[in-house]
Image 1 (cartoon, rainbow, N blue to C red):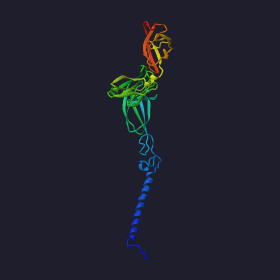
Image 2: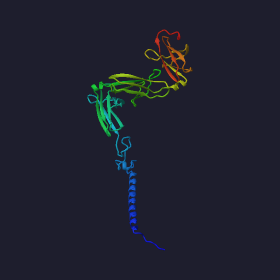
Image 3: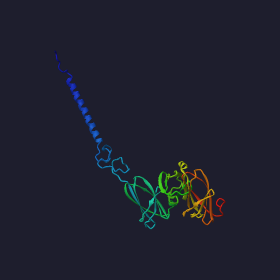
Image 4: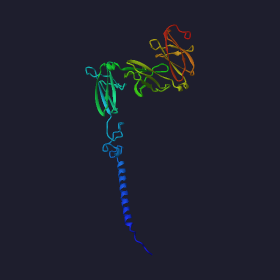
Length: 335
């Protein structure tokens, strides 16, 4: 048998293979190193070092620039409200971008924490009795900052609008504790009269006012208004929900005189039949009839001098009707 030795090109082929292996190993080592670095997180803030602008210091997760890997702080600004003599104004109303934000304390100081920096706010202050007003732009920066706003009746302040929002249910009664939103932002909560006052509004700027459903049988309500200079009022009515028609009607009668004082111990008549007496607050509840029923309801004061008569169509669920009694002869239905 004849055995041939390696050909004349064998050494060259072996040399090329060794060179190729060296290139592959170098590339693989580089890939492994790059992958290892990409997965490193030296400061443990969850942002890989390859994307971390501050790889040695952890990110502050606070909703502001949380993806850059660097520590930062939210804005904390303090407003000192003073009068023309630089004395503190306790209880001054502070508004931000036209929406009520709170009141200054006994020292005339108002604080806001946790605001996102790098924005400009329109901060306004008004005296607790409506005296004087100042509006000033405030640029928020990281950390603490102080401002002093002096109350004075400037031309610009006089040119602003004050808007009173009145929230009522479908029965015409004020809704207290309702949340009022302007442009999607919460602006305040209605008082016992169903009102909330919005100071520092820009005249000529259309506003979308919404009131989310306060629950029960009431749906959300809304209104649009373009404020004018000075004071004005806008009403928001809450409609009864369709589901209310499926609930048993409960009619609450509120008997008052022409000065809106309650009529206590008044005789309540429904469809010509006496039903009972009003309580000390002038209130009487009536139920037992289906929704859609038309009723004639009336009240006569205990001394017989005041009388009221109204027609009411029962809706489903809770319902109120106001009976305003006047000093006049009783109608035949109450005689």
